[in-house]
Image (cartoon, rainbow, N blue to C red; front, side):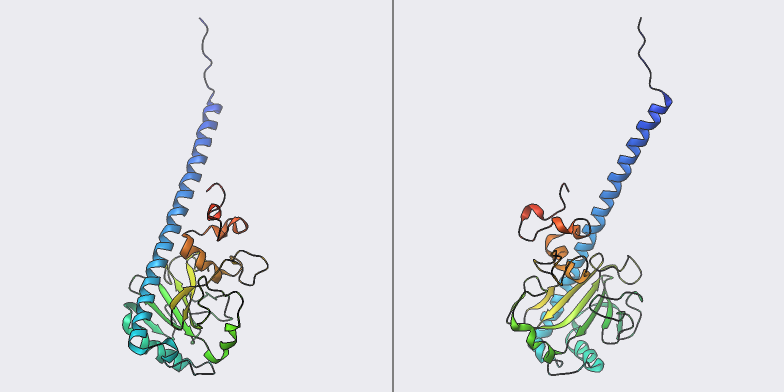
Amino acid sequence: MKMKKAFTLAEILLVVAIIGTVSVLTVNNAVKSSNTAEKITKLRKTYDILQTAIMAGMDRYGHVYDWGYASNETTDEALNRSTINKALMPFLKVEKDCSTDTGCWTSTFKPNLSSKTIDSNKMYYKAILANGASIAITFVQMQARVSYLAGGTSIYGDYPYNDQDCAWVYIDVDGPNKGGCKLGDDVFAFAIMGSHGLFPMGNNLSFSNTANNHCPKTGEYCTAWAFYKGNQDYFKCPDDLSWTDKNKAHCPND
């Protein structure tokens, strides 16, 4: 009777190793996808919280240009703080209010649009919301923004060309003591438009190497993709993504 050849110990160990490697990769990919979904869900919820507060501020005090900062021609820390205290903070539930002091952001985080860290920059009003996300808000010099309306492509996904950006807003969805505090990963950038509220930074040129607003090189401009498309594939295959081609809303084979 012919006996069947048995697997050797080495062959069995090789198969076990292959299965183990595949399992680890599968689990890691599943964890990454879960983490991304969690971040984007929290990003959108935090956006809703801030947008609701902005709209409430506009309902009480009128157009954002009338909140007290619009006619200011120079950077003014006290006016920035008083404007936010008056028009936004009463409509936000916060866990911690740092005002312009430190303690609500990771101390080393420096946005691409600034030469200073947010935590130490007194032009940013900082707080930790009740949902655990950190926010930082600074109004911009309105008189210096008028020329921005001349035309061209904006850094905002659905930019209303008859409007102006009044303030920049950063959101760290993980808060100051968790996550990597990285732009496009767990930190996202928005602008408050004068009469339309909060807009995510980024547009249909965000993945062009010739654009100044290139994502992920300049992490602020990844916000719109994460917000609207619901993924962070710009870290894996930015050259393969397209705003207009629905077949390129993810990395190939994802």
